[in-house]
Length: 366
Image (tube, rainbow, N blue to C red; front, side):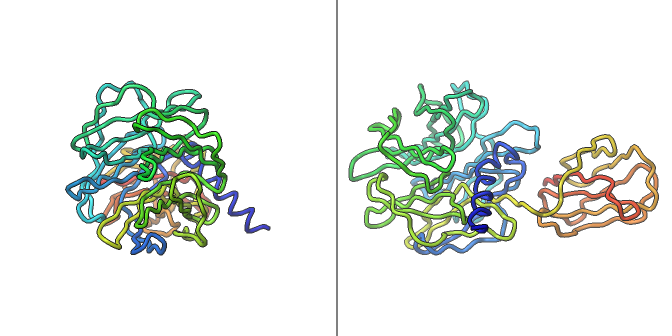
């Protein structure tokens, strides 16, 4: 009972990490599979301070990976895109351009490939009050988009659109998330979606659906134990498959799957990861220390409002591991150099007489 309760709590933390913590705390990773059922996680982080990945492969075999990028905790979200020919090595991210759009906070990108080779990108307007609106834009190059007129779908509190085409019924299906539930809507043209009130699903949400051989559609979703899956032939009657496709690591939350087929019997899933429970929290006292610049690429200056005496500065990564330490600090100014630390999110901790004075977040960029 306690285990089930813990999973439930962690699941809700995953679902609400975007609103409470945001992409500033998230990272994008990938996993590979020969059949869509057995997945192997790749420990190499693809993108930091990024969340809600959405991937699609164009007719030339190029993979476009979109995500929500947030360079700082108070920054505005930006939809970014990177490309790859092998699904592993990506170009540098760049912001997408959407002409004809009044949507300021575009989030939850869901790209699909149209029959004419263009990419249609669905996204949520996070800045609008209820109802939440889903919009779309089309592109010939996957970077420069033109927003299509009108709203694709609208409903209170929905997030994370997942759009796919069901061949047997010539129907576009859109799943959106509402807590642990999925809302289903259908369309004949991929533009105007109508909610299917008869559809009931509350096994998990924030999903991505991908077609597999045999006219099987596999919907990957965030469940209580990690990323799970369900199959259907129509996008309506979903049957949950046993087991967990990807399990989170220690103190890790994973969600927002998106799938691309590389070759025959070769699939890749991109997903977001969010680390909990490292025991490191940023202190609320903002007057003790300033860090400038932050983010930084080579070095940064720490300025304290108190005179330090034999203090110790410790840098921890997001796993709580000590990666750098400076001892015997006296005075009010400390120069911190990057040295060989990789880009990413870190926690700076300043201690004196074995007492923690302050803990701050650091972001190292390339």
